[in-house]
Image (cartoon, rainbow, N blue to C red; front, top):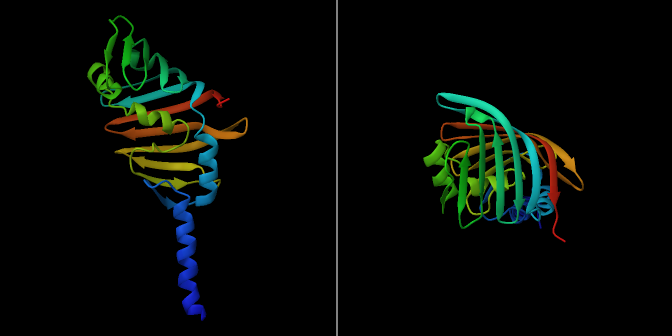
Length: 205
């Protein structure tokens, strides 16, 4: 078979191999190696429980601030505590895929079935909470289309999903996995900057 005939077949084989390393809703736009990304993703995806501490900066129209973050995740249950951002005092968001409760210092707790709707109604932040559970681990949420740019180590460098952009500028080695240390989330007139100071992931038994 001539080179002119074999070259297109070779390119097609390589393309199909790269595509098979991506989830059906993922589109790789730039950088990295698709197979190495698949390996990294498979190492991180099983982490469904963790404790995380860090610093959170928030910028929104007419207001900005920073504070500390504590995030406890146990499978579908989450307990996120913020201290200080935007002068709101202590804020706690806890719930699961059935119900979310928001507690803000000086107010009565409020609960709703949708975490996104609750946050937008009560504090004016339109946040895709269910996506955040994936983004904080350096992964795209699997239930929506995503466009990926990988860094030289085939980890997420930039993610575009559901009208949001997530940029990862630093990772840290935690045990056998690499997890985000600094990321920025922007969209819907909101900019969040998270710097993780302590990661304690829990792998399944």
